[in-house]
View 1: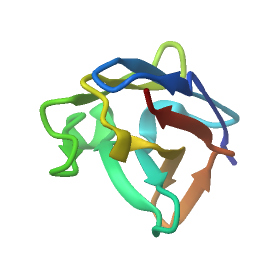
View 2: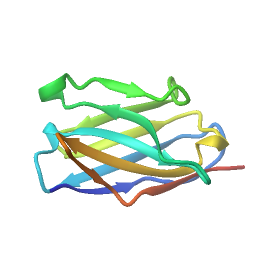
View 3: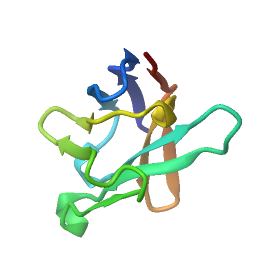
Length: 119
């Protein structure tokens, strides 16, 4: 069982930056594949970025085309925390951002954090 808590969302102007955090508890964080998803208004939830376990899969990262070069996913296994650094934010990045943890057939979600990009 894994509990996930996101933080760091808020209101930012276009071109600005935010860093989201996902704090995990309850299991061996370092073994989990982690990811950020988002759900924009009126849209389905979509994958934003993912990072594998450094122990089992080398800690590789993957990004949606829409955020490549602007967002960076990372994890600190010592702190049981995953991050999403978001730069050059656009209005279309406005969404609720969710943290996901997966290990085998089990997956867990956080409650989400709102990111609003607007002038």
